[in-house]
Image 1 (cartoon, chains in turn yellow, blue):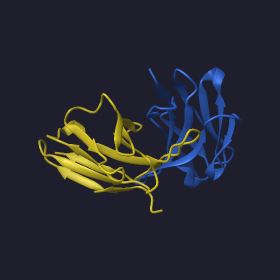
Image 2 (tube, rainbow over the protein chains, first blue to last red; image 1 turned 60 degrees about the vertical axis):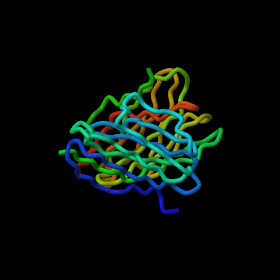
Image 3 (cartoon, each protein chain N blue to C red; image 1 turned 90 degrees about the vertical axis):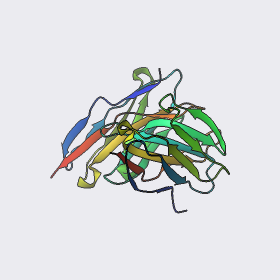
Image 4 (cartoon, chains in turn red, green; image 1 turned 180 degrees about the vertical axis):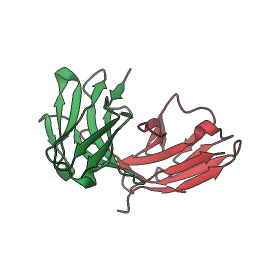
Length: 115
Length: 112
């Protein structure tokens, strides 16, 4: 068990460019979450997957954001036409959820800076 | 609306002193409740969680939290703080089928 892995750790991009982040969850975990965290704030929920199905998307997730989890394993989060307001830490978490329990494990995040 | 509130943005305590971090939630039903700690440059680590049963929950690193339904609170406590406890602490809540909501965090500074 190597934990939740996120790549890259840091991403600097120019406004208007597209970026893609990857998250590799703990292998047996069936749920995968994406959060966004800005300085001084707690993580804000963006979306989550149960296996390969995307079950919920936050209103924060504009049309420029898309997430996939094609085989129920790793996930990607893409931001198109980035804006300066997209600068944040993007956190991925995974869990195995059954009827009585859930424990999230977080990755170290991808820090996005949009210039 | 579902929300989690941490009233204290920043708390400073002396090493060896006791600690209490406040958390209040607003949910339609009793949610699952969590406390996470985040050290600089590190991912979030779960300290403890409450799902049901005993309202006093023990966690790692000597932390505990008490669920009080009447006050919609889930405050985190530690009897004696160590310098290594300095970090950002997040309270979180989630429903049975819903996403997790996090508070804004409380930054803990520990004075020698």
